[in-house]
Length: 310
Image (cartoon, rainbow, N blue to C red; front, side):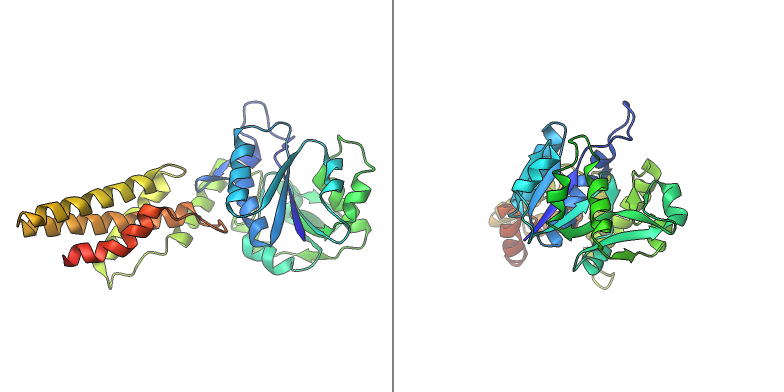
């Protein structure tokens, strides 16, 4: 079994700053993006180190449980010993690190430590491990490392301690391309400017809009992509779905009275709003292992075309 260890304990953030794990990228906190990667990597249990169980940790728990994973918030790292057996694998992510999912899944099919060349990684806040490399903030180690962790003081930096334990046990290191750093794809304690760049790329990469061979759909989906970029972590997708349903009902009601042109116009509006909703929902749920599709959306997917025909 694979267990993921996340952390929202950020000791580098000032009192007036948002802790790095709670900074937003495309409508989700960085620790939620870490959770999505852990679930994609096959982790069935998620442990999260937290000083207190606040709203952010509760929402993280709901996101994990919605994907079918077990979630446990921990204050003391030694309690990991009751969750992780020696035969398990432990995926560790440092707080405030935003990895690239494909690199993690590709490199960590088996235990290993992901690293960057020390130049420029150390200058960007990554932890040096030797004269040549710095830890990228993600590792996969055997569960027996937790037994050694239990012998350390409670106030130890748990991800860093597990890194040292993994390296001392001979866990292999896997160097990553510096391109991931240069292009702000792999982030550590990111500044607002870095998050803005990554968010634009995120939306563009997940919007997946239709080509202009279908002009109406292409325009609608591009409108949805624009709205998705401007209204992250909101209820826009729900409002678009409700608007589409209302327009479809009105279209049928108007058509019943013989007003076919207004009815067809309302049906076209319903289709437009539904196409926009699909893009907004696709962007907002990108990265999640099992994103929930509302029943209203499932019904509209079946009924929009019959409404237009009728």
